[in-house]
Structure formats: C-alpha cells, structure tokens
Length: 215
Image (cartoon, rainbow, N blue to C red; front, side):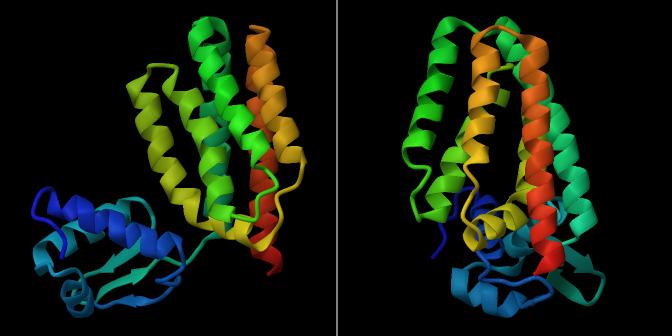
C-alpha cells in the first residue's frame, strides 16, 4: 500500500522504475485498473503520475484510449544526449573556473569510487555511480535552471542508457573520459574541461544509438 503523503509522486517513482527496469516494456498498454489494485491507490494519483511520466517521454497518453509505455526513439535519444552534452560542457567549464578545492575533492572521491567498481557486473551499480559523477558536476554550478533541465533530460534517456549498459560491458574508454574531464577541471582549464565533457557525451550518444539500431 502506497502511503498518503505526496501520493502521486510516490506512484510516479514506482511506475518510472517499472518502465526503466523493463518491467513495463515499450508499447505496452497501461492498465489503470491493475495498477490501482497493485499499488492500493485510486485512479486520481495514478493519472497524475502518468501525466508526469508523459512529460518525461516515458508514457504516451491518448484521449479516451488510455496510455502506453512510449516506444524508444533512436533519433530522440540522440538529440537529447546532444543537449545533455552541451549542458555538461557548460557545467564542466564553470566548475573548473569557480568551484572550491573542497568541492573538487568531492568530485575526485566520486570518481575514485566509480573507478574502483568499474569492472563490477552489477550494471545498476555501475550506472548509479556513473550518473553520480555527472549529477554532482552539474549541481556544483549552483544554477537551479541548469540542474532542473539536466535532471529532466537525464530521466528521458535513462531507460535506453541503462538498457545499453545491461546488454554490453562498458568500454574502458568511459573511465578514461571521466578521468580526462576531471583532470581538466583540477587543472582549472575551462576550455579543456568543456571539450572533454562534450566529447564524452558524444561518445555515449554514439554507443547508445548504435545499440538500438543494431539490436
């Protein structure tokens, strides 16, 4: 039974996990009746949750016809990862030029943990540590608009990215690219940090798109 506090947010989180984890597959019709029974909620918080997930690109709503889990669009993934690259490039430059030494030490520690567990067979753990580096980098800008946009787009591409991670062993190049971003930031070289971050996301986009076009 889902609690009453912030009910539709809790339902949103549960449904998002089901979609991202592949429990609800792309193109699957969403049964409001079954989900209401499973979660112990009424249709109102469920429909509010579906509206939020629709803004994240995870659900498609049809008037008088219910909802389905959104199919994965390769072109849309590529476009959104391109925008994420621009956002993270800006963040990397800003952080390299403005972050305190204490903040940079935090980023170093996150990278250390990521490197230590890089070869783990736990794809979800790998992905969470990977994303922690990116989220921390963006949050260090202190720019709430940037953080909100980055969070939204990251949710949009989480499903295809984590599916790609589960299907393929991440190349060592990912670790090298993170290291290049970090080294440029620690050197306070804004241009190099921006370039390294943008190149990293461009490589991620190529890998994810190739996975979906060849599967």
